[in-house]
Length: 202
Image (cartoon, rainbow, N blue to C red; front, side, top):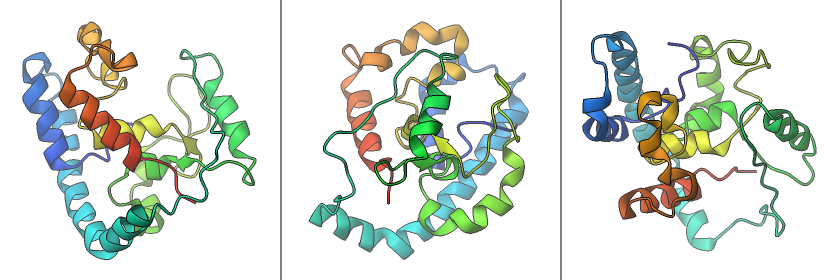
């Protein structure tokens, strides 16, 4: 159950994935995992409602005023194939806090409630991630830099290149999500909106 990139999804987004992919899910083999994500989705929906009450007005006002002075006119994008050192490079760039901003793992993993819940959540949910990544033994914690695409996947209900992690046998179905040239109009809109919402904050 640990290190699941869908831990931060809300119930509506989770139900969207289940509706679109129910034929591709092995409900028996992955029953416990599905139950865990469903539980987390219910929890995240509740947490996001609190986020909306506490911070919704301030966030909308900031968006309306376009208060993004922290954004660089020359952003840096780290792109690369898996196992080529992109995580290491991302972490090194993140050390320069004068010029760069980044999502930490908690904000990227729980994008619907991190503004108010991060301090508490890092302690309460510490058990959902390991101390190292299982695929390469690199250090993992809620405070370390994380790919924004993790948040985009959660916020877009799976309109993301992350989805083959869950549906490896159907990986070809998600190829349009790498460039979005042939993606559906719905997925394009969802990913664009989620990408805007998941930008790192100061």
